Length: 179
Image 1 (tube, rainbow, N blue to C red):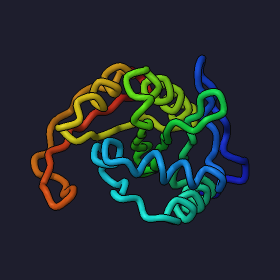
Image 2 (cartoon, one colour; image 1 turned 90 degrees about the vertical axis):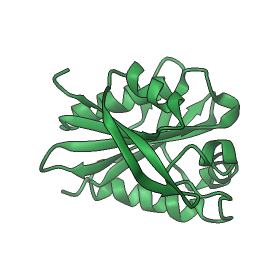
Image 3 (cartoon, rainbow, N blue to C red; image 1 turned 90 degrees about the horizontal axis):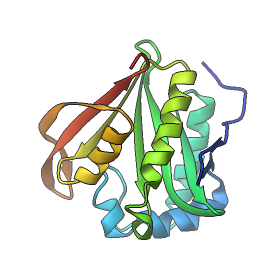
Image 4 (spheres, rainbow, N blue to C red; image 1 turned 30 degrees about the horizontal axis):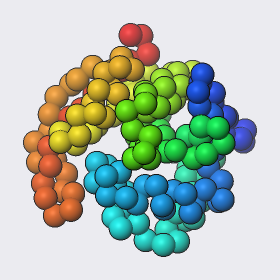
């Protein structure tokens, strides 16, 4: 499936989730590249290579049109404070995966939970039946976000990923449209 419509903007009481723009590249590199953020995620590089955010933004914009995912800039009062996205695991099985990060100075303010609720609502409206997420076991704060948005813990996958040359356990969560 190819999407002709532009990626929508989502709003919450405190946040605006908008499609990423190339102008976000410097902020993404600066905010995501700090170890406190990158070190709690599976894929953000540390240090964040200069210039790497622009191709990432272009890939994510193409993913929308190819129906492979959607990534939003999480903004508060016009400032980028994080990213959140869903990847299309499979339309055949109606399954997607959500991922997010919030800038370190903005932690513990409920922004990830607020943004994730909006994206889950979008995913179900977009036809997905299951939205799943994982977090590194050593990052329980991300698991609390998943619990707050109604996801159920489905298990621990032992030594499932390698991050910074260390095998790590991950926790699997999911929510179903019918729940």
